[in-house]
Length: 400
Image (tube, rainbow, N blue to C red; front, side):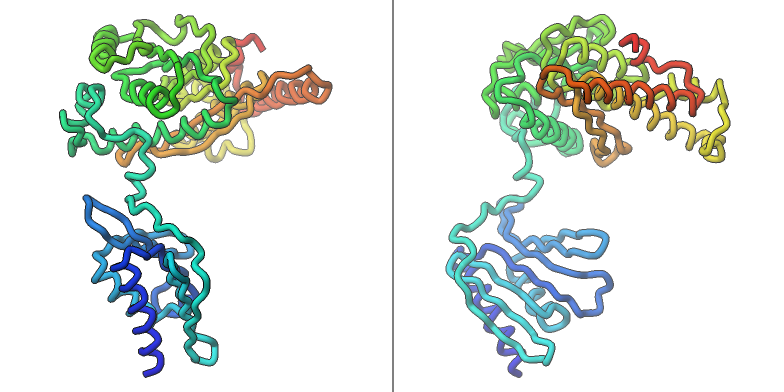
């Protein structure tokens, strides 16, 4: 009876905080119930399609699960969880924090403490809050069939819109690593229909307020004409698209060079152009690692991973890792801090690897740096010998 009374007091305080717009969040922990792997439950307010809901994040040992509930249903669930599993809960409001705790001896205590925060957090859904490109009435989004004239994202373009925002989020975090005002000229190699190119221009000019020129390089003339037309309609006067290949493009004075899904050695061509231009940021998402795979297949060197590479699918994966690993080493050799990480471009495509080079601040070359360069060259040489690789295309382009 006492237990139930304490739960009722906690729930009453929760309902009051919701009705008075004082609710911040709830945290439930020390789970002792029957649901396997559940450790913690975090609850906050969100707006989904302009309706207020409570978002439940169920934290398990190996995963998180997010579920949204109407406030009435959410309150009932919280009451049930307090009676069937969670031994401690904290209600955060702008007026006070209320702590519910069941002690080891079974005694229940309720404690009030000073409010941790005096502000109600913005109630936006995560996906909406994180979007750097908003689905407003923007000509380029309409022309590219992402949104209608009113700025509503088409149902069949939802994945593409998420993909665009995902890329911009990544680029945004990388650009923030550079000194302010660094980005003045951008080259998007193999820009295709220009989805990312337009979004990046929008972000740099509308959000960061940078006076940056962006050029999309694409070998298909029909796409070049299409994108230039969209740029004109959008009044993006510092955005242009040119017909040509990555190999033949003059990347002089480029600060940010991007090449997403450039096939096989076209990625090497892009990295080469970025290094030669002394670009402060190089971002590539390689695909079709054919050149190194052919080298490994032709030479058939026996090594410790031969038991794996005799299978085509493992050989393909090994070739991808070796190709991109050497690319990262070469970027390091030329003074770049490198990052290689996996990301998912959208729900219907496989995982991709992003290879990033951030130019280090130039300084007088030290003995340690010279030794590091020699060490890198030795690592490349040893890797090639181990896998039977005669040459790496990027290495040949840079005459290492």
